Length: 317
Image 1 (cartoon, helix red, strand yellow):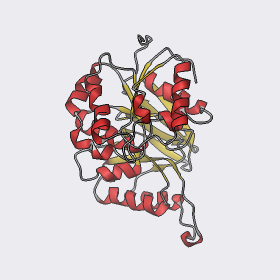
Image 2: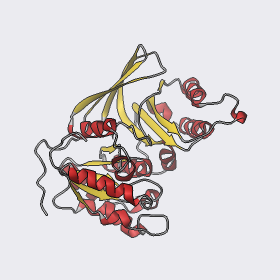
Image 3: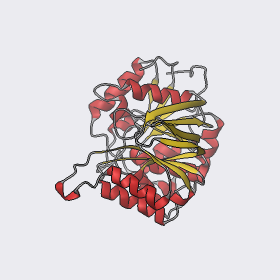
Image 4: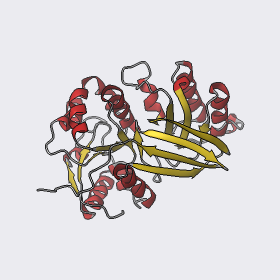
């Protein structure tokens, strides 16, 4: 983990129970050894049925952020799973908007947290970060330097660039609002007030344990309900955890991306390390993005997102 000034990190667990308690403990230990203060650790062991506590407890994790004083530097999800969708109607969007825009705070996570992140963007205009979580990333058997470096870069640098190799050879520069996250969670928000109406968007998607045909079906639904018509491009992160069979007969993610290009006319740029893998970038959802591809190398310039104060956080207790 790259040396960073001491920061205060507040844990939230609005989704599933953290079944890998040793990983979460290791994540806390690593962050503390790096000089950071990790608060609200009791959320790690909380459990009700398959959730990280009752709905009321998990909702309190979110809404209490509007009243925390002092505010932490980083709000970090323990893990994903399922549970955020049950809470969206009772989130204090106005309170969170007032509190979290008064001071730059990096709210970070992915997977199930995508639902809250996009709801905050839709209802409060808050930019949050789709990136690592405590258990699966900071508590991994081997902490990825790539993931750690990109995390700190995103939350401390007002403008930065990502480059990667793509199967697309060329794309003229285009600009738009960077948004997205976990594709399945985006789909759960279609037709609700919690899906932001992003125009001229650069939609970034990822998922795990989803077969290519399910991913194509979800993307076609986004097309058919008009969401993709408002986008300028789609960036594809990691899609893993499925096993092709003989029945697929060559049907793959590559054919899905080509189908979406043909149906929508949008550029679909694959190859970004983003999602449920140990190696993942961190993306500010709602920031400004500029995308281009030259000779198979994609470049995404990102700006306009909140970043942590340069001075080290005051750590007490």
